[in-house]
Length: 368
Image (cartoon, rainbow, N blue to C red; front, side, top):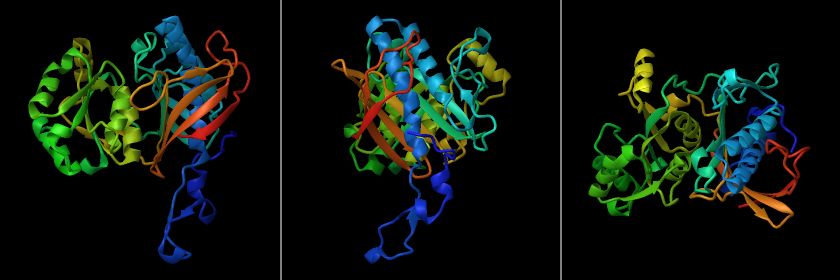
């Protein structure tokens, strides 16, 4: 699919690109809503390439190779972006010659559209090699300067919930009170609520508080991006997410949650002593809860995630015979507030040494 030279093109034009809302008797001049631009669909090639490359590491049991391959594949696809982009949340190390480092320029520096880019080629790196669930390849884009820069803070405490609880949760309230609010606003009993929590030693007390309140806990060793997305989507089987996870993942997720209209609040919560000292030296508050609108200050966001291993949200990469590879991708566009899941069948092609297929990729698509 050729790239649009203007990622927001369908928003900047008028009637020709806006879908008329269904009004009384189909009157002309009815209110119009924005459509998701083709750019949203184009982004899926980036995360699909990373997911396919990472999946090879599952078979080999090599998490480092998975991460290297996914990073190389994602970087190769990012080179095709018709934007002036900068990686603001990444994972590479410039000094070590790695790609996707913070500050790396992406795309065309002469392009008029400037973006912050946040990437996680393998969210859940430690679990990919063993084939555990919920691993994703993720990218988020927002206008330049829109994403909060967390500095040296690697961990964030998060609360995520569906649109019904937006603005209704007191982040300082006890766990039982938060759950009571979620139950009231969603029309459920507390005993019917399911809370996604990362299975970490730091969450022992949190899990006990959730159980004491009467709710159920869904524990996973990794994948709080998937858990947060499900918490923001009504009737997904997850009613909210609580606990501490990665700060970069939190800000990336905030892009998606803002588009979905859900509730996302985050508090910087350093876990290591060295991190605490660095955060204190940087003057970053560890007591303030930041709303989604502070973490990402624009609605003009794009979010794309492709499953690497099958999880709660998406199917993982699956080789089908010797002829094709199936991927499943979630695409979210901020201004249209649309989310779509696309299942793609890629014609099998041999991968290069870094997991990047030579030449262009051929694929057929079906909506899921």
